[in-house]
Amino acid sequence: MSLSNTDVPNGVNHEACRPIREVLGIVGDKWSLLITYQLSRQKLRFNELRRALPGISQRMLTYSLRELERAGLVLRTVTPSVPPRVDYELTPLGATLLVPVQGLTDWAVAHQAEMEAARARYDEA
Image (tube, rainbow, N blue to C red; front, side):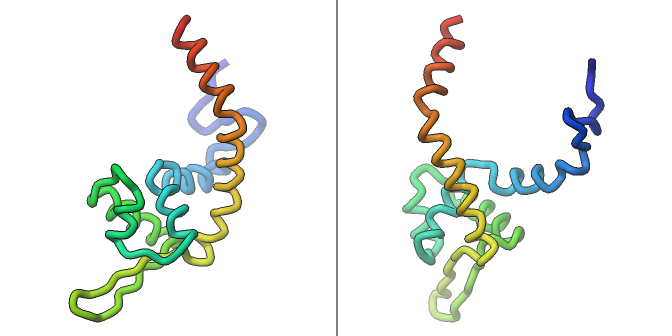
């Protein structure tokens, strides 16, 4: 049995999955979730965020913040000064993302050992 690109098992069609694909496209990378987590704690400036996320490049941080802002999850506030001050914070919509992300985090921590064992068994085979 083969599925077409519009068929999904259990009677869910391709179009019904669109909102899930869109959300995962925005928050499904490692940096977006880590940015969201950092901003859940406090408002941060660009360089504060960059220091809080070792390994992220300036380009990737800029890109991720723009995508999160475009999706309405992050608010960028420019305060006129010399140099201009730019702060980032979660919007009320962005804050609602923390509940499912915490659920995923809890699941990952609870099942980390099982997943590591499964990967080891797979790699040995």
